[in-house]
Length: 136
Image (cartoon, rainbow, N blue to C red; front, side, top):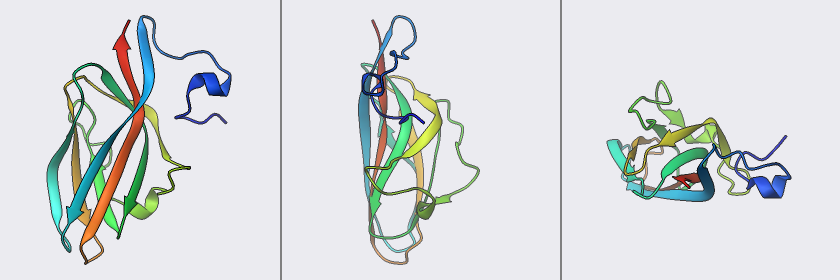
């Protein structure tokens, strides 16, 4: 099985970028400090205006349990409800692959709903890992 987020050259396969496009690895961080049992609806991560972003994996670090859901580039939820953080691996060497990839348009936003489930203050960092896709 191939690593979903490794560069294709490292895997020994041809570049899978669509014709007249170029993909290069990129990640968007999301940092949040939640109070006990706090719920945040509609928080965002802005996508740069230079290129579309293809989400391919998630990595996170936190001090406690939390629930997460987010939307695709069209505004549709990718989960039917909050997914507990225990369902995502939190090892940077083993990111949670998101297949098929989700494409966010340039100047778009990743809309995030997050809920603390630990009952204590919770510091969370989520890394949306993927590739920027620009026209050549």
